[in-house]
Image 1 (tube, rainbow, N blue to C red):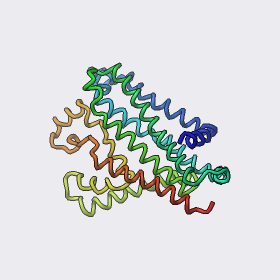
Image 2 (cartoon, rainbow, N blue to C red; image 1 turned 90 degrees about the horizontal axis):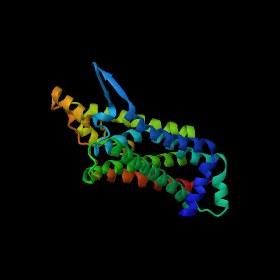
Image 3 (cartoon, helix red, strand yellow; image 1 turned 60 degrees about the vertical axis):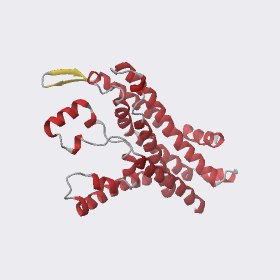
Image 4 (tube, rainbow, N blue to C red; image 1 turned 30 degrees about the vertical axis):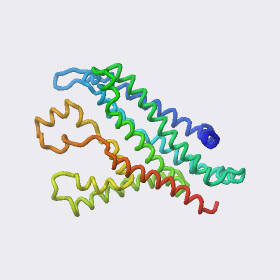
Length: 284
């Protein structure tokens, strides 16, 4: 594993564009800390966001994970490009000539995907601890390390999405078209969601039915691992309760369940396996 991972990381780091994207990704992730310095003037009230509890444990695990997950597109570009470059530069064929099997080649890509997901998760873990201990009103260990399931959801979300990017890169072989396909697939899932809802669930007041059905689709299953945290914030929740305490928007189930993890892991394994099968059958 170490040898395969070393080969892959060397390829990525020697590519200037990939190097810039990796550095930019972690720098921008660090900008979450700047939220602490934002001051707001609203209806004559002046307050600092960090003083309103958004960095309180354990809420901060949910908040930071959800904000950070939107930046995964930086690494998605790298994953798609690293596969497209193998075809463009002929390094895939050269690796096979040098004695690397197709199985080892795919494994090197999978190890890289896992490393990206683990590295990003570890970074968010450390940054959350720093911000939490700097601003949280609650620092007891029992509170600090509760709700860690959101960090697990963050990792599984990244792992599944990166596996999908790897599969797309191998399938299409051109980075621009592969990224376009990923965006197109997202649009297709949203269109299907609208069709299914208008056909079967439009008379239902809540969206539980359509969310259950769409939860079996790949991108939707990954997004279900991390529900938005804004309506969970105590100030927003209190305001929502005053307006309409029965509104489903303010009565969500924010936690990841075992079946969310199981579905996402199924798709992750599926995309990794299909990546290998496509490469194995393809005439290089």
